[in-house]
Image (cartoon, rainbow, N blue to C red):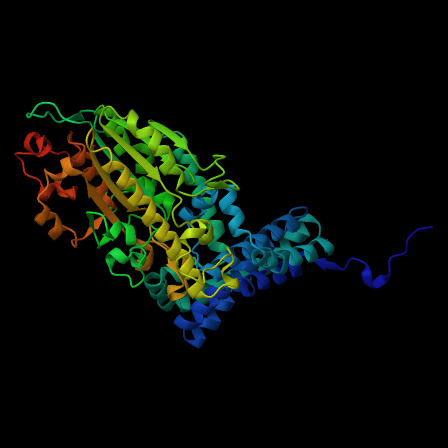
Length: 555
């Protein structure tokens, strides 16, 4: 017997234009909370209403244009799912989904992605993405014959475009001036900006596929030493992750997050700026020869970096990674990924605590018999799962948020968890210094700790990082920079001068040249004005300064 479907459960029929207008209204109104909230703050009522009408007309014209038979449902569902997914991050964390943020999402490990896919995220996507998509799948769309459809659609598309253009022309001065002054406002428009930036990323990735890396510093060599034999130099560079200067007690923060480093003979540079607000930008930039003003993603890919110059000089170079990878920096040197280790002491679910570095260093340091630079790329304070970045004994600030879903915690709990991760980084850096101290009889040792970028923990309603640099708050760009010099390295530096240098502005621009200076590598790409320590060295004790070639500003 055939199953009879009640009339009220039969699929409703709807014309493609009608559905297009409904979808345009949904995209305009529902998943753009941050954009409309900001618009209400910036615009007078008349201009706000005009913006609503103008955007609706543009989206309606777009939806009607793509309402092609067999493609309507997939395209509409794609728009709605992108809108729902993007709105979660924009509305909950204040995230700006630009090209670099999308690149970072591609680079994210499965473990990190798992922290972001919380119950709240799933609920949000189901309510605002899946359910509307199911409704679209359920209805039966009526399409006219080709020429009739062209005629009907054109009758809606062109008037909608004319109205939108008229609205934007009448309000051009208001929209243009505010758009230039508040670029972050337009950047939250959903799903227009995420889709546009995804297209830009695709174009950029396509162009970058055939990039040939240009060598630099091929003239590099260890500067001669006129005093006879010496110990091999060992410099360890710790590339921190998501540590902000605002949470470092070394810089005056009220909570004691740096008790171990405070007991070390270090120099803390209290006014240091990052090159970017996201690892995919900051990490390659800080190891590149380019300054923040000159750096671009394309230049970073097309030019050798600090590690290559050191290798040209005959320095042993290694990169140990406990994060999402080296971003191409260590492609041409020895590198090892630790995040996938199965060490039960430090590792769980595809992630490892940074303590894994310490055990590995114990076995590695006795193998150093030549000038060596080792880079340790931390997992550090990577959020939102701050509570997974430190062991139980480092839960110093409580109550601390024990979830990756911030809505389950107060801001104080989130900040406590973040500060605990900073305290654990303090322990890691201090422990590495202690291990270097133990090698001073046989090695000339030094250490640099510099974070890639900072982090927002609720300030101005923002969380995490990745804000476009031009609008990023100081919490995301003001970073910690720590220097420790062993007893041999210290003899070449005027300590009073170094103390005066500590409060002066520093930046990622300095890392490239400071490491070359520490390793006494002589090359035309070395610029003493970008070496943090150059002004505090004596030419009589520093062969790099004494024998330096004339610098070249272009390579």
